[in-house]
Amino acid sequence: MVYLFAGLTPAGDTMARSGMYQVTQHIRAAGVRADVYNPAHWQKAAEHFLAQPRDARIPVSVAGYSMGGNAATRFAERLRAAGVPVQTLLTFEAYQPTPVSCNVRRAIDMYGTDGLFSMSTRLRPGKGFSGPLERVNWSKLDRNGKHDHLGVSKEPAALRFVQDALIDGNGVRRQPPAPGEAGCLATR
Image (cartoon, rainbow, N blue to C red; front, side):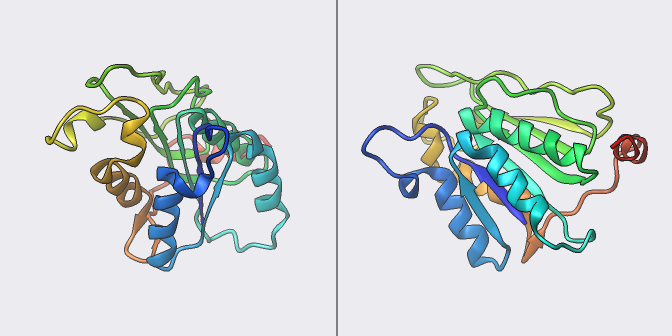
């Protein structure tokens, strides 16, 4: 299962025009269950996930763009409190994300250095996080021009990277358990 959180949607617009919605559709087309949420609804998404009967072996990944980056990190922390590991946490131009929780096996911080402005805040490890934290400059993914915070949300090369980081073929990309994960999840 993949949970994605879009950025704020301008008045009169719909999430269906957002880049994260596009990624959701591509992930679904690959045969992986994926849902996209408004960042304000991260708690509702977490509670919905936790209320579903599930096989503990079914992996979950989460990603968020802009304000959705904060929602994604908070979602992952809520899953930690319930003892659920997160395969990959990806923030994309994240606006004020919380520190990466210890149940996250792999964290990716996508940020940009080109363009007129960037609103992103660097992702940082939280207490007990022991997995890899990768930094990816999305400005280097597409050499056809510069993109700002808003424009990159629909940039095909960046969106392809997000999709490929989250899924592998027709499933969630699985990560090996992080060294401190067992103790982290045991504290629930």
